[in-house]
Length: 350
Ligand SMILES: C[S@@+](CC[C@H](N)C(=O)[O-])C[C@H]1O[C@@H](n2cnc3c(N)ncnc32)[C@H](O)[C@@H]1O
Image (tube, rainbow, N blue to C red; front, side, top):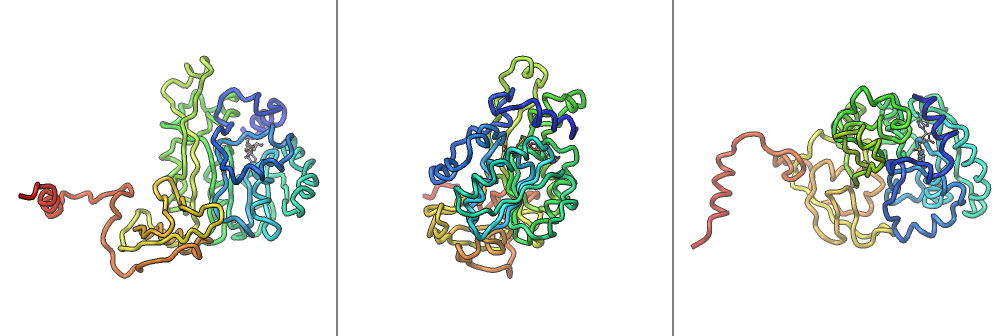
C-alpha cells in the first residue's frame, strides 16, 4: 500500500481540487486568531493541503512538535509560528514530491516568520525509530489525515507513544468508519488514496489506542463526510465515514474509565487564545472562573500536562465515589437504593 499512496500523493494529485471525495479536504472554519498566521503560508503549500481537520491544540509556545505525514507542510508552517522561536517542528513524510515542495519553501517561511525552527525528514510513520529522533522528546505529535493510509496502525501508535514526553499528547485528525471495511474494498487504490478504504472502524481505533498505552482517548470534534460521487456511493453501501479529531495523552496513571474522586477544577482564563473557556474535548468545555467537577483522568490531563498553570485544582485522590456519572460508563447492577432515592426525589412534594 505504501507504493499506491506514494503514487497517489506524489504523481496523481496536483492540488486539493483533484480529490474525488471530501475525505481529505477540511472544510471546517478556521478560528479568526489563526487567519493571520495562515496568510503567511506560501500559496503553493496551501493549494496542496489534504488534511481533514484542524490540528492545533492550545498553548503551543515553546513546544517541540512532530507532524506525521506532513505533506507539503501547511500544518508545519502554521504550528512553527505558534510554537515560536523557542519551539520547533519536525515533519515526516514518505513521498518525495510532497516533501520537496515543503523544502522548497522553507527559506520563504523562515524569512516571513523571522526564525527557522522547522526540520523536514523523509521516512515512514510506521518506522519512526529509524529517523534518529530522541525517545520521549516531543510535547505534541500531530497528524492530519494520514494514519488511515498506514498499513500498520499499531506500529504508528506505538512509535508515537515512545516519542512523546510523559504528559505529552497525540492530537490528530483522521477518517473513521461506522463498521469494519469489507475485504473486497480494502485494497481499492482510489478508495485507499482518498483516505476511505484504510479508515479504522471507530471502536477498533479505541482498542488499538489503549493497547498502545493511551488509556483514555478523548474525542475533540467530528463531522460526517459526504460521499457524493454516485459510483462511490453504490460501492460503499452502508458505510458511513467521519472525520474526527482525537487527543491521546501519554499519562501513565490514567485509568481505563472515568472514576469519581469528588474533584473539580477552575480554569483561570489565562491561555491567550482561550480567554472565556477551555475545550479539553467535545464533552468538556470549561468556563473561565467556574468550579467544574471532573473525573480523575480529566484532573490528570490538566494537572500533569502543559495546562497545569492555567487551572486551580480542588480535591485529591483520597476518596473514591464510584464511576463518574455521565462519562460513558454506569453502575452495571440494579441499585435498589439509588432507585428509591430517585423515586423519592422525582415524586411531587405535597
Ligand atoms: C492526505 S495527505 C495529508 C498531508 C498533510 N498532512 C496535509 O494535511 O496536507 C497524506 C500524506 O501522508 C503521507 N503518508 C501516507 N502514508 C505514509 C506513511 N506510511 N509514512 C509516511 N508518510 C505517509 C503521504 O505521502 C501524504 O503526503
